[in-house]
Image 1 (cartoon, rainbow over the protein chains, first blue to last red):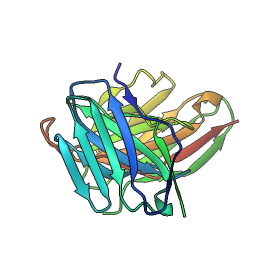
Image 2 (spheres, each protein chain N blue to C red):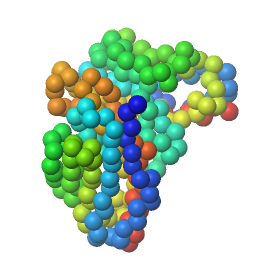
Image 3 (cartoon, one colour):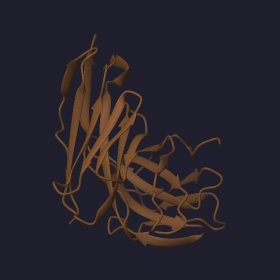
Length: 110
Length: 118
């Protein structure tokens, strides 16, 4: 059974700090990796995706992928209180559908 | 691009009643997905369509659940004889995928329909 594991948190960081969110996955055939942000009571919003090993940067967000270690992470630089949300990691293998983790709650304090 | 829309946004029903939800995907997207999410969990895949063809159904999708996408545009998800365990957020997402070798698998979610079964 395909599994995606995330620490449920909450991860608490002060405003302006770097938040580091981690995700591990069990299916070695996984090819595509996604980070969604979900505010309480709202639907998931896609913020980053990464398909190749290494780093991918988009504004304050950096996604990091290490397929050998089956590990993907999301770094949020200069964290803001508005970044407080649950961050969902999702993984997709070829000919398969998305498998989501349970999410990590991030709290950014002013 | 108006995004994925879902209707209704909230539904309260009594146990045993039937409910139907609608999803309108992003207009140029050929794939449409249904997920269910309960508190503290990530979205769980239910089923997906490519154009009008239903290509996969999760074992979570009991016989009481049925989904359609008759013209390859909007989709409906019906739950018959609702049970309290059906209470959840039902999410629809869409994507544009040409082939499984495509690297573009991003799925975009609608606002969801929150179902409460009393």
